[in-house]
Length: 323
Image (cartoon, rainbow, N blue to C red; front, side, top):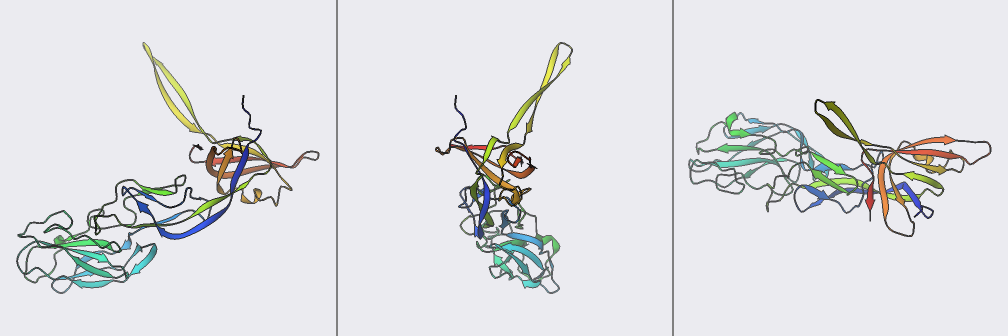
């Protein structure tokens, strides 16, 4: 039977911070960084900034013919939270009565502008990007705010029915689609495919700042237990049979740490922080167990024995095995 005599326990003793940087994607749902793990310690958790509007940006009919008013707003633009000043924009109608779509955008300088779609051969609109009568592709460093659709050449006021601003169809928002941060993969996963409305049929840019953990050893440690899921069965007896159901419970991880003075120890200074822990059953092998959770410490100061701490790892997900 194997023992953990040569085991090693490490904790997130520090962090290496990375400023806002563009994430990459191959499927327009998962956007990856170069990091294997994201820290979730207070002050070091990822800040994800997908390009898109945050507030404001409402488009309404302007006072003059062919004008639209765009309200002031804020947006994520290439990793920066940008304020956009209100503006009045004019569209240039087609020369004949054909359908044309104009996209209101935040351009790369952080100002509102207009992108023109291709005119159709008649008054029929298309929902296909880049097609005749359809909305234009948006430059990769721009954000689509709304669309204006006209099918007449005569100068006139823009009717409210000609302005379209459905989120996900005509308006890019930073909070759509929703996403989750996957700390154990160093990536951001959107809950739906991000629309590919930009030049080259690509999705909007997604930026993030984050920190990667620097591991230090818990020099004197024992009895590591990872946070793991246990399954329970309950049953109800009814006439002629039994109905069963299962439920799962995530338990706390734990370990014992032997301390120097119980006050200035590096581990003690990180109590109540959300940290990564890495346990090697054999320190001479690479396989390990990773867990991320809030560090709890209960110290004991015996008169005739070693100062020690019963430590807990309160995790939101079960530990993972790394071969």
